Length: 241
Length: 225
Image (tube, rainbow over all chains, first blue to last red; front, side, top):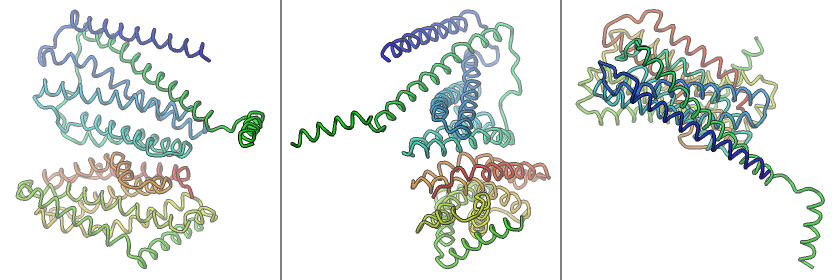
């Protein structure tokens, strides 16, 4: 057991170092190689972080959805643990999407916030998954929590396209599409690597932590083996006598 | 089919009979809705008139949302009293039918809450005469979707014995598409003077169909004695 934990810890350290190095390399490329966009200026460079984080947010939400269906279909608790881990990652990444979007909006349009479809959509997505985490933390019974969270997650995920459709009815100031120079496309592609590594690392790390915590709780709540119980009864009886 | 319909109508009649005898829900939620409209009207003051009445739709939505949540909570709480839910669950009734009966009861009570609307129209100088039919159609479709989700989550929250704002917290983000779409359609019609056509209402109907089907399908997972 100790050996396994040590191996896991080593893998986590190597993975974390690789992620930090990948971020460093992507940042170096962004600052030295990528051209500055002519209309918006340097603030446009936040886009190289914004888009990969947004895509990874959707992937995390999809993972929550799949894990929730997996739990309802199989009733295996590890699906629920995976959903919880992915939801926390989704909320964190979505917060980054909102913050980077606001900074970009301030630089490009002079406003921190505007009720444009994409910003409204990101905010709604963030709220849906924050509520998912609040619901989880509000229910004590493990089985009940897993079922209710799974049902909520399925509805929340299927709600996402509806939010997008309805938000598109609102007036938009975003450009329809962005034309990127080859150097910009390369930078964007490179930025997907560290962001995806971070997203995966957060989910997997948290998942293994929740699994260990669940196992520990399970061991605590399990009845003691018959021989031990008998031994402890003798000890108690001895103590009383 | 006939059996299902009879079961749904029996359960719905039971809910409405309980409400008629106790008068616990409708009076409470209507007064709450009117208070919300009045407080927001007082808060906005002269600004309310400056919005040329279009603020009324937003204020009415706020009133409907909070009154609706309280309504869903109360109608489900009735089932929790004296173990009525446990009895209902052992009865040979499909749980989907229980959901539909609860939804119909909630919709009838929500129709009662519609008396809030004249308050909003009056206090916010909202010219409803431009297209009263459009207003009724849009709000009715939006409220159906809202009630579909609300009925499901009310069952969820009541089964956990949790109180407070959890139900509102669960319902509001999920119903955002309905709020956004209905608000935009009303703005198109009343502010911009454009016809919303069948497409706008079609979007709301599609949302309703999805919320209804989904809520009906997962209801049996969340129902506990």
